[in-house]
Image (tube, rainbow, N blue to C red; front, side):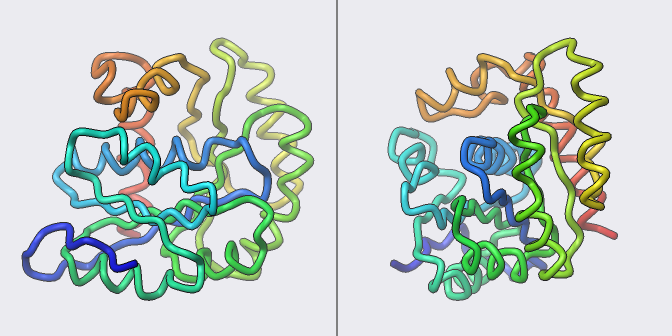
Amino acid sequence: MPLPATQQCNKVEMKTIAIKSQKGGTGKTTTALNLAVAAEKAGQTAVVIDLDPQASAAGWKDTRRAEMPVVVSVPPARLPQALQAAQEGGAALALIDTAPHAESASLAAAKAADLILIPCRPGILDLRAIGMTAEIVKLAGKPAFVVLNAVPPGATRLLADARAGLAVHGLAIAPIAVEQRAAFGHALTVGLTAQEFDPDGKAAEEIVQLYEWLQTQLRQ
């Protein structure tokens, strides 16, 4: 399936972020979609490449009225062609939404990326499961950061414990944690993101902060 052109313009230097975790339910798709809309609102043309057979990102796009961001569902074997189409279409940012439990596809996405973002809930089961993801990141040899996701509001001690638990894997941790907020779920249900559903809310603020921080990392 060819990737739709995002916009006809002079080529830009496209940056690619692989959003990955070998565990399901960590918030990969939610993170990818929210960051894509944050990029669009900041003036960057964004593309989400959905490698998950469940095609959750593509399903969200089907419920969305706005044309942007482009979301395309492709099999992992077509990732190079999808990235090339995004580049030729004028995208400034490509976000690869990967599937859990798919080691070879996950490694291919990681190697194709400029930066790897690993959403992880702060619970003990999620922290224990991150070891396989850490191994894939090491094989890819790309900059990678864990973003603690769905953190209960006010859970300062849980957040500190999670950061300590991640340290054993040698993974860097993003300074912005995303808290568990109803706006994320409500927004996705109606084809929006938190920034569109509640522009002045805490969820929107956290996504903007995460997006802006990622931009500083991509420029290094």
